[in-house]
Image 1 (cartoon, rainbow, N blue to C red):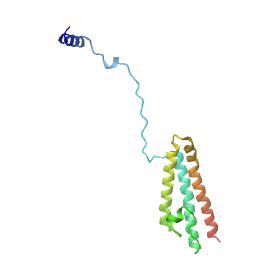
Image 2 (image 1 turned 120 degrees about the vertical axis):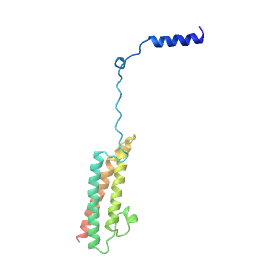
Image 3 (image 1 turned 90 degrees about the vertical axis):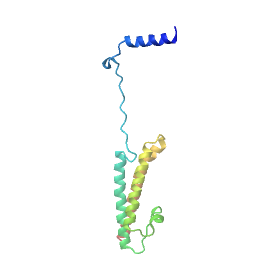
Image 4 (image 1 turned 135 degrees about the horizontal axis):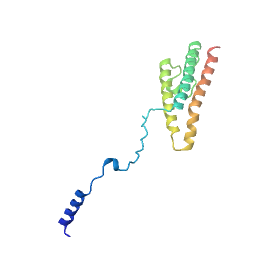
Length: 148
């Protein structure tokens, strides 16, 4: 057979064979894609821990300002925030730094919780409670300094 005959035979077969209707085709279940979450979306447990950390940081900041008001010689004792905020930081700088700290730690915790490395996931469950505890201890020390 020549090429022309093959083509005419193929066209004839296509015309004679009825096309399948849509209801006769087999149905294949299509898996639903997981809803894409924005990069800044946090898990519920991370948000709760961030709220606890924010409360402890607010307590620490309030008692720090109280000790600054009652003690002329008192200064910031936190070795991390002292170089960043200075000896006697004001409430605006402390609030801004505290809010930034809480957001960064919450985002870091979120990424650590979804890490493929098991030790990093373990660290994520200690990070926020440890920082909240440090703020609580510092706030309690500030409270005792301010009431002397």
